[in-house]
Length: 264
Image (cartoon, rainbow, N blue to C red; front, side, top):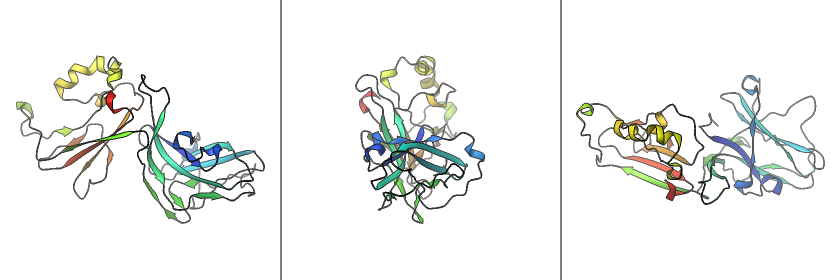
C-alpha cells in the first residue's frame, strides 16, 4: 500500500471467529507501532502471520514500505485449526445519530488473491523474545501483488456526472479565469455543527467548499472521489483540497459513498 488517505485504517479478517469469520464489521483493526517509521525493516512477499501454542497471543503485522510504517495487533488464536485471512483498508463510517448507533466500515481496498493467506494448524510460532518476524506487505502474497477496490456492503454510492459543458459562470470576475470544481456532501443531521454555523453563508457566496477551510476535522460520514474520462485520470481518486481545474468539453464523474444517503 502507498500512504493511507485521511481516515483510512488497516484491518485483518479471517475464517475463525477470533478474526471476524469473514465479516468485515467484525474484523480486527491494526495499530501503527510508535517509532516504526525509522525502523530498518526488510520486506518480503511471504506471509508472516504467526501464532503460539494453544491460545497464546498471535501477532499480526502489516507494512507500508514507502514510509517504513509498521502496523500490528495481538490476537489469541487456536493452534488446532487452519487459519485463513486477508488484509483490507477501510474507513470507519460514523453513525448518523438517529438510526443506528453502531459504526460501520466502508472497504477501500482489499487483498484478492484466489488463495488467502494461510497458517497451517499446529504450526509453531516464528515469534521469539529475541527476534521479530518480517512484516507482511499489503497485497503481496505468494510472490505476486493482488489488490482491488472494495465492494458495496452497508453503504450506497451516488454518482454525479458532468458533461456537455453544464457549468456556466456569470460573475464578471470569473470570466476567462481558471476555476476549480469540488463536491462536498453536507450532513444534514449535523446542520447545527460548528463549521456550518461559521462558514455556511460565506461558502455559498464565495463558491468555497467547507472542507477547504481550516476547521476541526469531523468524523467521516462519506467518501468523495473524482475521475475524468481521459487517459490520465480515468481511475477514481480522493479529491484534492481545492478540487480539480474545470475545463470545457470534459466528462467528470464524482463518486460519493455514504452510509445514510437520505441525510446528505
